[in-house]
Length: 512
Image: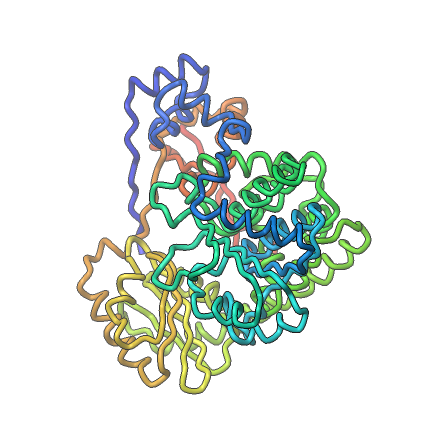
């Protein structure tokens, strides 16, 4: 389906001012202005991210002071503290930061991440049964817990004290009677952009001030960078300063676990950026959780022994290879089913018995790219079907799924990606109603929209000018890699390249 271009507007006077005052090329000045950075002062601030200036007081996070009080008391009592995380990289990195920090303060700590398929997300009765075996006195959550009201009560009934740190939206299931630190509990809290690992880092900062190590948290910005990028947090303000600092730490002196990951991913010796982390280290660390048990990734991030880190990184590489093989196999099966069932409808639903839970979203994305319509891929497990969906263009898939909520057992997500669980027998009706919803949308909603930051003349693209783009990094959510449009350009020497001839190479010319 053909894409549409949206060329962002940039006030010419503001662009000229940035060019003049900051000695930058037109296309870079236009990029900043089109993104709302339209004065020399704002541009200077943006181009020089600084934790000293941009990192906010941890105590502005609602509930953090009370949670820190509870954790401080537990450490001073000598309690056995269990850090309860999540199996995605934000959760794994948050568990790493909290565990390392608490141990530095003298605490006895056991990190714990639920097993994806056997125990499910966040605190569950199955997870409680397993964690009870290590007999914790105190449990602190990271990157989860905000919707675990009943489960926290179960922990309390077992005599386990609880504190929650999270960054997800609160609902009517917020735990009661325990401290809950979550910036999203206050809509006006500027730290609401933080990932779960960012909140964990704030907690370590707050506790460090109480245990004579106020700067300890700065040692963990590399871990927090991984989780922040992986969880697609907005790359502005605190997050921009955090990621810039973490990338600097990784590039200057990567710790053994990260160095081992860079080596096994083939990224060793290259400049590490927020963009290439998403294609090197991050998928490998996420692979463990996708395959069902994040423990290997957690163990790797908790080790400082280079030989051990190398061995664990090699094992993780094997898990990632296994994930890729399962993903490729499921892609072929799903594509075959889609080819049979797709008759031009505006939503595609495919389902199969026993399809692997950990790669559904990736495969759904591939089907979206093939068919140009939103796609949901379901794993059927007896009477229950669990699906992951991905959208296209400007279609709000969350609202579409919400319109069928009376059929569903549970659902969640956002406009571009959703998770859905429903009775297997309801799948045909769900598909029919989803397609009806999509049929009512205008055709333009399904067209991919490419946002252009600025129009550029090829004469501007000197090596020196293009090198200045690095000053705009790190890139990420809400601050993507810039996209430029050049008009009246001729395509020369175009050819397919690569081992499978699936990449494109060409030269572009404006005649000069």
